[in-house]
Length: 112
Image 1 (cartoon, one colour):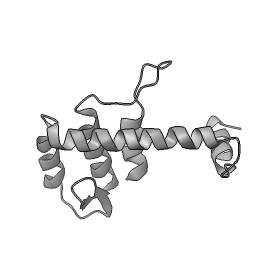
Image 2 (cartoon, rainbow, N blue to C red):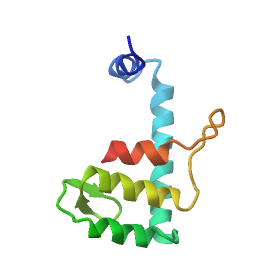
Image 3 (cartoon, rainbow, N blue to C red):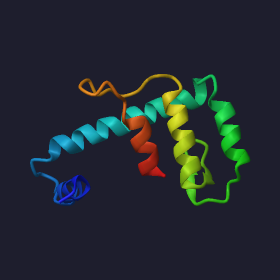
C-alpha cells in the first residue's frame, strides 16, 4: 500500500467524535491562520497587487474563485494568487519539526 493510499484510508475513515478530533481541530486552526494571512497579504503585501494584476491578465474564464477578490480563474491561478498573498507577509503557520509552513501551499491548492 502506498503512502497516498494510507493517507486516503486514514482520512476516509474519519468521523466526528472519533479519535481524529485533534486532527480536525488542527485543520481548523491551519485554515483560519491561512485566511488571516491571505487577507493581510492581500491588503498589506507589497507585491500582492502586482501578483493579482498578473493573475487577472491571464484571463478569468475559469471556475475557481480567487479569494478575497471574488473573481474566477483556473485552479492554478487561484492557488497561485492565494498562496502568494498569504505568504507575502510572512504570517505563516509553522511546523517546528519540519521548519516549514505548509498551509500557504496546501490550503490554496485545496480551495482551488
